[in-house]
Length: 353
Ligand code: SF4
Image 1 (cartoon, rainbow, N blue to C red):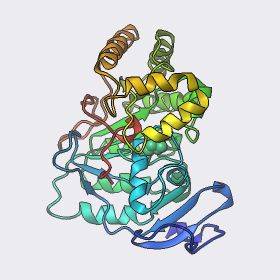
Image 2: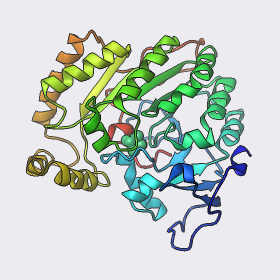
Image 3: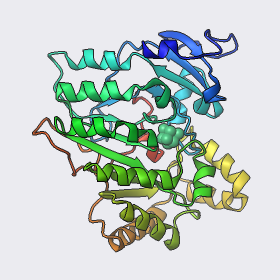
Image 4: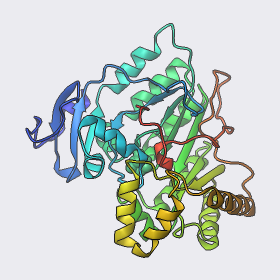
């Protein structure tokens, strides 16, 4: 396999690494190009994941080639899933990455089953498929090719500008199946973005990616979540965000307030205490009902979002997770997002792997 020949400094699990339940582990790898990151390469038995029947997600299947995410967003809801591996939901989630190195061949095998109905497959629902590791492992090209070859429509949501590498492939795929593209971008201020999402490409780089996708003739919706109370919810910030997205050519924007579910809540509040201590009490009051900001706040914010969206010419929300049905080839520009809650939006179901 192509990844087998890559340079490593460690090839076996160190005894102190808490990877007791990690099945299919082939080797553990550290490499100078990814300082601070440990890759746990596994051979997956399956790749297509069925979304639980009680989920409100508008799709039934997902593929997640990685577990853990070096984008390291402090509010990431998927953090909790690392506890299922006996890894912690903080630094381990950011730096102990599980890589399904055989995911491409497993996907192709699963898609070839006669029982496969070619339902829409969503990627980027739990961890980011174009996080930095993808530059090393190059798993997405095989997945995209397998989906397109099998006639399966799909969507990708990412913060990773590595996606640009695969634009020609995505363009080719879009002539065979319907695809939806989404970029996650909610913070325009580069310093704040770096503080909250330290491992992600800059807002400017993500805006450029939107433009490159549009220039290639692909649609590109934006998931502008989470809007952070008292940090990015003022009119000036929202105007700057929607203005920049419009200038970049985004085809739609969905936005919403920060969710703080267990597994993300403690990390975000710790970050807030260090960086904006004056806001901690206000956040505790705003989120005293649980994972969601108060209804009054959400109603107020949705009104501001509608206004700013209209001001910048957006007529609809982002449209990349539509439950596409097998149909004529082409690029979908319609999809629903009101109920979509991927990890990038800070709120996803922990079983979506
Ligand atoms: S929110 Fe998305 S990009 Fe950020 S750490 Fe989680 S999975 Fe990665």
